[in-house]
Length: 170
Image 1 (spheres, rainbow, N blue to C red):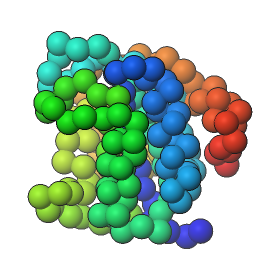
Image 2: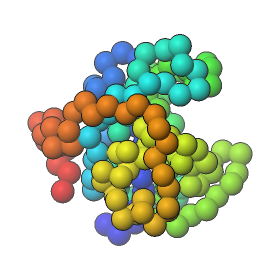
Image 3: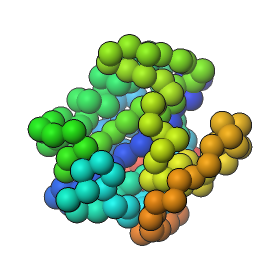
Image 4: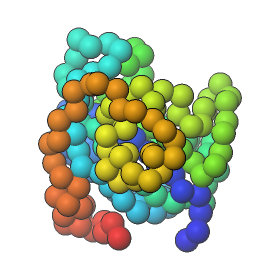
């Protein structure tokens, strides 16, 4: 497959957050997203509305034949399938699945902004992105903001967990 390179950010702080992240990755693959790399999983404090549980966060790199709009629709469908209900901005959620980058696309529509408009402000995006795509991040000339990001599960352990479920990241 030679589609568009994409980077997705995943986060969860409701229910079994680790299971939510792993299920999201399996659903992405099932729907045709080829996952090329997964970051470690990090525990981070909530941003925006801070009176909630810490999040588990990660970033994945992949390829898609879908348009950016179709990729966003797929991400929203996976969020919904895993129980996300949008009640308050930056509130608790079973899954947050954000399209950070899609190839060289630059979009600014009411539904989709690419690159993601707040990726530069979020250590929980930049730290795992640095882990899996340091050269890509270097080109963007971005500094990681001083937010607490704690390594929880290494990328190699994440890959092992996925492999046990039939998903092999090459």
